[in-house]
Image (cartoon, rainbow, N blue to C red):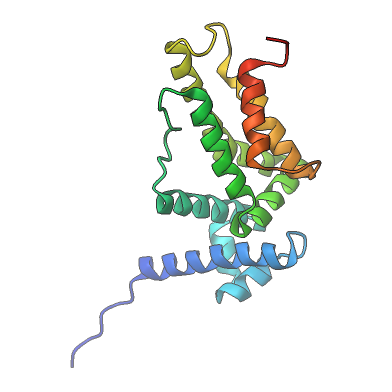
Length: 204
């Protein structure tokens, strides 16, 4: 009698993990974060609730990891360099291109609902907020820091400028307008943010 090979537990776990990611992202988009529960994620993914709690401590942790995975997949699919911003030698053009891509991502249906959910929950859930900053936001901001430092070395940014503060001149207004829906978010808007950040608003 030929024995059957033992099931591949690693493969089965990865399949379950993927199903849980997809379920969490879909549910947040369909019913919103408050009505998304671990039980609902488990049912949608076809796994037991205990499977989720074995890997994550809360639905917030599931959603954050699912979102990070989604963002990584999107970057790979688009051929983007996840470790650096473009550096063509034209700082304004590079920043405008990156912010335009950010606008596209912010309004991509796959990203918008989970991104808003994580941002909103992170305000009232300090631990989640810290994790969102550490795992999602700060790594992206450091790419801007590196690009601005490169521009400083090339003489395109004043030597005394702190890149970590400077990047907030164009990143923070975009985030605020998107989160609060306080005005239209467009390529023209982000291009203008870059122009104001790099050249100021005083008469020339």
